[in-house]
Image (cartoon, rainbow, N blue to C red; front, top):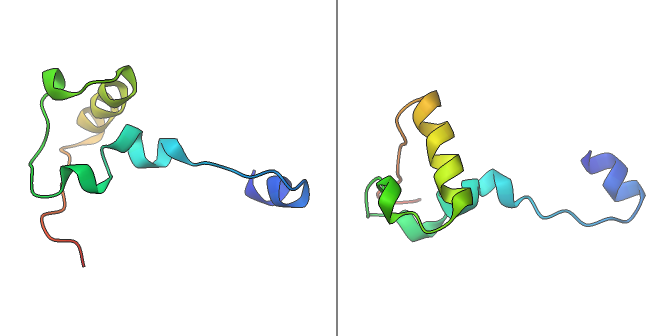
Length: 63
């Protein structure tokens, strides 16, 4: 999809790749959030998928 968008001068925002923010710096050093701590449907959906795929690994100290 990226090559087509580049050729068509369409910009992409890959929000889903950050799993609704679960893979952002917001969770560094905070441990794995529980479902009731997630404020959006998107976060709960991505957390549910991560739980199905395997335990979430949260970065404690990024490089």
